Structure formats: structure tokens, C-alpha cells
Length: 385
Image (cartoon, rainbow, N blue to C red; front, side):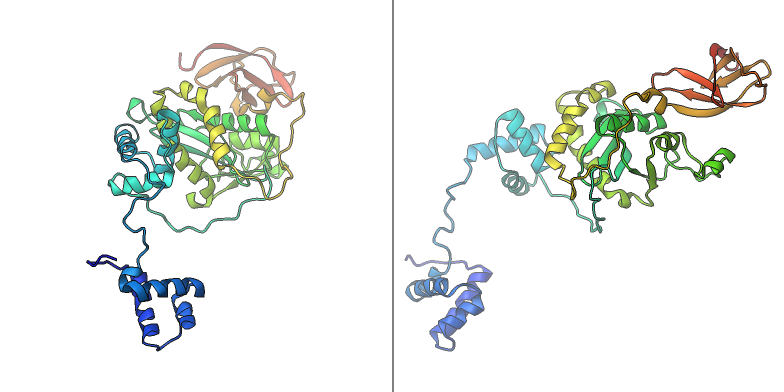
């Protein structure tokens, strides 16, 4: 073996010190194998090379040579150029997927991660230690719901809100894009979930007044034995869904992490497709969530499905309507959503100054009832005119 300078790593230096003790007959080869932490047969092979070549026999014979699976240098340069031009803010995993899907270049995500770090293009993300709550055991036992306000279209449009639902047991996800996190958008994503999977046993939300209220229950709610319900809570009460309010964002870790996946992957997907409108976003939402579910959803611990099916003859428009109380004026009119409505067929014992229930359905239609009696309405003008 040629003479010259040789660099030994820490493991090789420690082996050399142990083998020197064997050479000096201070310990036996069997004891040396136990100290080094390798098998006796491997220790004999290393000892043979050490006796013949000295320290030169300790490094691996292939050190410094290119590996058989080493990627072509031109491929590496091409990938790094594409990353700089198209995928600068993509993580290694997503970038490797898009390089294969859009550019026909297949590079393992860990290989790409190493290339990016060597080129100072990727520093990784800071990891925070948090204690994870155990998943529920059944699909539909608990579904987390949250709105994620974000610049989903980057500089191409203003901020909007992604309404996301994630099953706690499986990670299965459904979502819609809306302008803001409102009662209407929360009900829209809940209806999408119910129509596809059934009624979940419970929802896990934050403490926004869209979902829960700290107000005292009304006399009617006291008779029912329920707390004061928001408009969203009223729909959940009709469906038999329990609302559980989280005390912190960390408590909703499952959906917070899923929001992070969307903010990473979905933003870039919208950029690549040059989509900058909410309607266009919802057109591709099912395609995107289907891919997310294939990649990240898992099987539940137990196969029983806790979703309940609704009767086939149920009116979903009525179930998902938003209800509120209004006071009837002396001229048998009432105001709602900036408009004035005339009551056409009041109940026999109805009277002005009485409270009635206004029900606005998802399709925009307005209904009014006094107890169980439906009152006809006609729009007669705008409020304040």
C-alpha cells in the first residue's frame, strides 16, 4: 500500500488504540471485539489488515471513490438549477415530487435534501417539542375543524380562509376555500363532510364565537337543558353533534399540522396552476385533498365507523339553515339582513311586538315561522328607506 498522509475518523482512531493493546498483548482479540462493539469475525479481519498495513488498513478500502449509485453530476446541476428557478421555497419532499411529476426528473427526497443543504439552499425547519395526544380509535369519533387565514394566492390576490376538517383517528381531510371564517363557511365544510361520510359523533373546534358562546342560555335552551348555542351550534344540535372547544392551538395539533401541510403544498400547487380565485381553488380542492389523503391518511385503530347516516328523506337545506329571532313590527313587518319583509299570513293568535324565527337556507331562501306555524314573507324594501 502506498505511503502518505492518512486521515482517520474518531471510530478508526479508537479501533487503532484497542488494536495496539492487542499488539502489545495487553488484551486478547476476543476482548478487543467486545470493547469495539463488533463481532469476533469482523475484528479478526480488521486485525489482519492492521498487522499488514498498520493504520492504512483501518479506513474502508472504497473511501474517496464514487459510489455505484451516485447520481450523474449533470443531473445534480440540472435539478439544482430547476430548484432555484421554480421550487425555491419548496421543501425537499415536495420538490422531489414536483420534479418527477412536472419535469420528469426522479431524485430521492433525502438525496435532494443533502444536495440542497450542501448548496446552502435548504436549512430545514426548527422543531418544537410538544406532547402529542393519542388519536381516537374510530373514524368519525372526533373530527377537528378549523379555519386557516393565509395569503393562499401569495401576491396574486388578497388573504382568504381555508376551512379544513380532519378526522382525528385517520387524518382523513376535507376542505373548502372561502373569503373568511364565518358561520356560513363553517357550515359549508361541515355539510360537505356529512354528505360524504355521515354525521360525526363530535367536533373539536377553537373557542371562537362562531362555534361556542359564553352567553347565558335562553329560556327555551334552559328547558332543553342546553347551553346558549351559536347559529353553528344550533345546526350541530339538530344533527346530534357534540362540540368540544379546545383551550389552545396546541390542543388542536392534528389540524394545525394539516394546516401547515396545506400552507406548504397547496400554496405552491395554486402557483404552479396559476390559480388566484376562490372559485378556481374549490374546483381543484377534491383532487388535491384526495392526493393528501392517499399520502397521509392512515387506518383507524378499530374498524367500526362512528359516523351516523341521515334518513334519505331529510331536507338538508332545512337542517343546515341559519336561524335567528326577529320582532314583528306594528305594521306586520320585520327586518333581516338589511331588508324589510312583510308577513303575509300571520297566525290567528299572532300579534305585533312578538318574536318570530327567521330561517335562512344555504340556497339563500328566507322562511319565517311562529312556533310551528309557517308565515309567508314578501320583500318590500331595504332597511332605512
